[in-house]
Length: 415
Image (cartoon, rainbow, N blue to C red; front, side, top):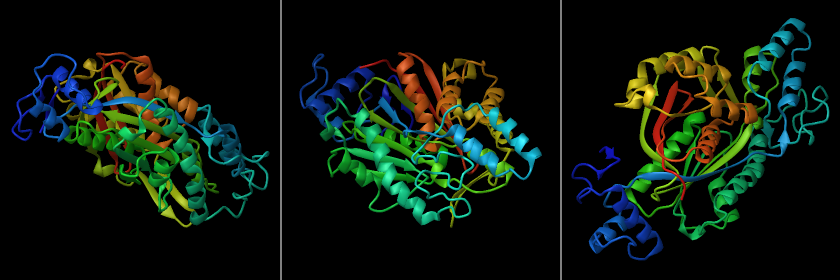
């Protein structure tokens, strides 16, 4: 079943005739606020009942996004720590420093406070990451269970500052950097005073593209339950998986990662960013180029230097399927997950984009690094602030598989 932006739902699955956008918006507003429609009488009672019972297809919109990062800036500190692990090889240390400085990152943040000296006996102030005795996975998960709810609460509180919290019906959490049970989903309900009846889903261990999958799920919920209010929380504490290694490729990979959280409200209220269609590309030949594995000493990321060229190739052949009946020239906004400077360069080359097309993605990379699933939401948050209505956009994020999850969207102005 495909959604037609102008006329609502096609086909017989909805069971009712097609709705115009304005008709549907009025129906949803009436249902949400439990009062009759305010413009005209063309919606019968049976159609309002249909909206409340999920018997027609709705357009889903990201109405708002709020973000949060920890207090501890660590980018320069982590670079110096990483460089110190190559102290015995001045040539490789010089290569590392040169490549790290070209990464396009100026700031990253961590949930733990760094020590005073990056070349000292411990990386963190608390002495958990001691040289030669870095913590195991259990300790790192304990740190996640303590720190992740705090950061998630900050983002959700900002998101729902002026909202009726009893209106929240669904919670979707994405994370690939930590797990516990009872989990962060229940922590968010308790800390943010959300109803315990909220339907909860965790999208776990999918990596950087999980936010797109969360938005896809939220869209399905809104299409079936037009009065729903879905809150998405993308929470990642990547720096918990710091490693001791002299492997140059792994050190350069870790220079990308930072901690962050993004929270979004998705409803059928027609403002913000409209979620139009989703499409996934899996380049199976690149399956081993990016992996995220659980080891005894934390989660281990392998990121091959071949990833940018693999993404460039996959987009070059797959962009037609992503855009549908549109061309690259028809797209005004590109919300590309800034997995690294070389990733953004590869997307720019594959699609022959103007150098300014990925400006917001590069800004997020520069100011926060790669925060896994939260990162593309930081880009969309900037688009919500900077662009009004009638812009066509394409969002995409990449992860293990090698997978590109994509979303077509449009801007719909403010409330």
